[in-house]
Image (cartoon, rainbow, N blue to C red; front, side, top):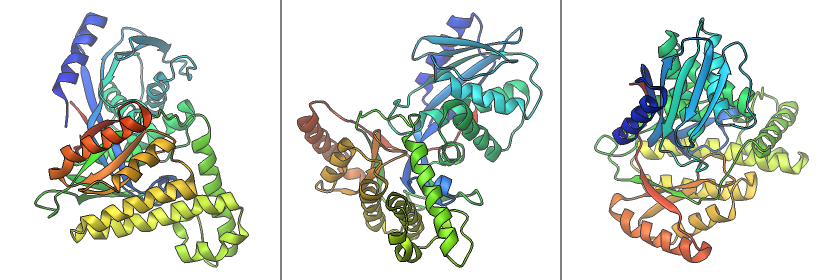
Length: 393
């Protein structure tokens, strides 16, 4: 769902700043992770959705080899040359675009620079993947600008490589896949081993379900570039290596381990690695169950899986925080709310709440009031609609 007001504002800012209109533009939505937390880099399963907030990227060719890049919401500009694309320590937001530019340059010839501008409406630090929206919108726009055609999954990989090499986060492909493959009123079901993507009806006549999501931004800012994300990934890989050595079948990643097998050997593993593995193996199981529940119209059963997922984030993966835990605990008490959990990397950011549409207003007021009494400031609550994926405009 493209916000025309934001796009028109971006177009005006571009023309005012550069003295000419943009030549190409693209839009990519953020994402909400509904079930399947930290399973993507463990080659597991995720249910996610593109959301009704996103990022625009506008560009024109530059007359030389210099690139100019403006973050309109920050009033910041950075420059670099196409012959020397290196990460920035001062303007870290630019690293996502630089990484994507470097990835595209390996897919086709780039002879000149660009002038670009970024503007979106995804709350930063809210766990809704503003970074992936920036990567995909810039990738689509610059691909159009330079005539470099890239398959959707390869574009997702270019975005992921930008995170790895330029932003310092060893992320999986969840955020990029969700942004690209989103569909209105559907969830995106991804198998992160095969990268098979399926869209699953979520709400409306086709699904036979009346439900929507609330995004509740704790305003506890999270950053994944400080090592906590990479540490969790390392422990998952450690657990997979151990289990590969004791199980009689091949174990390439935690996706290959059943809950029963993990329980059999968890006491013999490093205790932290065992907890991290319990979260991932449990999440893969919950995603597969959740898909079945949605197909059967059992939305309340789906919601229970979301509550279970958050408990695992608290006890096993330890990637929640006090504010998110409070939101989920309060959600259990409020009529109409069927499920709640943290969404995304964790350590702050947002909770995603499954709710009947008729209860949105009363539940939002109850949650906001409780949060305000506890922390002295409101949490931002918005209705999240599973929306269409990224595209060139």
